[in-house]
Length: 96
Image (cartoon, rainbow, N blue to C red; front, side):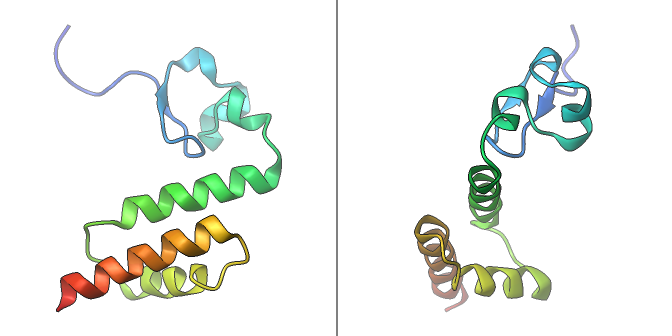
């Protein structure tokens, strides 16, 4: 088998690449696996936000992403707020 595109799909809630069988019919398009689809909506939203914040580490952000990051710094969820503050602090330290 030649090296190329990885198999399966990426779940944007848990952040893992899983086999096609782990996704329902609608899960393929939404990029949410069966296991994560069964989670409560608040839990899914928090995990997706944390994954997005983790993806921001170590790269340049455009103005829309910086605005989104600053809004997450005022989030009511403590884990999201702390992670957003850490990412923003990392951006500020890289800038100087």
